[in-house]
Image: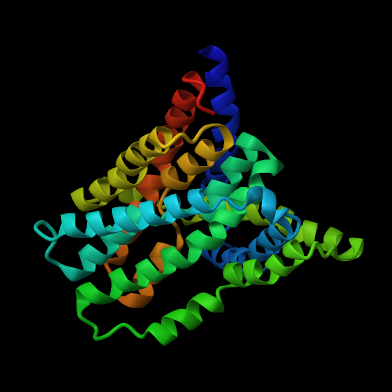
Length: 314
């Protein structure tokens, strides 16, 4: 048991310590809001797409493309999204609250926190497969988020053409689309481009984690509502517990099970705050859910990994 505790600490602590560094740096005015905003754009538009491109372009798709696993993850996301929405109908009447609550409860920060944890947990071998899952999960997250941020407010019909264009021009999805032919046809970039890309890719996760820390406002924790805590408990406790048990029941083990647990257990995505702002949802509620899930997932993810290791499932 002690070995498993040490192992779990070594996996989880580095990721959340970097987030803590970002938070402390912001509190001590080493970085500011402008730094967080600019670095977030840099990560989203350059370094993270380069990271995803390099990971997927070097994959052997015949070895890592698991249709059943991808179908399970995307189906589980869609079904739990619907159940959360249905569950809010009797209790949350305000449309701005409803939109922020549902988005916060289903949309995980898999692209940043998830990939960082998987890299620590299983190494580069599993990171390629985890990145391929991201390629399918990102459009699902974006489509479901737009729907839930539009319908409760009765803003009219959803513009599916506009939504499709928004997804296609997403830098992370573009990186996947561009990388797939390189992987399929086994095209190797010149070493000069790979080395340059690696410099940008190596920036992606640490810089993004620092940005998450810099964006946290723990002072708001005292004023967080019951809705914020309820959505957070669904995101980092109920969903990972139920869906990981379902994956175990279906026979998933080792790297596959670990990746799926991380997918379901990640804290709420920072992007949910941005979309809530743009589309008129409750911004304060969205921000509090991100903060609570980010802090709470330190413990829930650690406990989950510890249990899975203790029962020799990963």
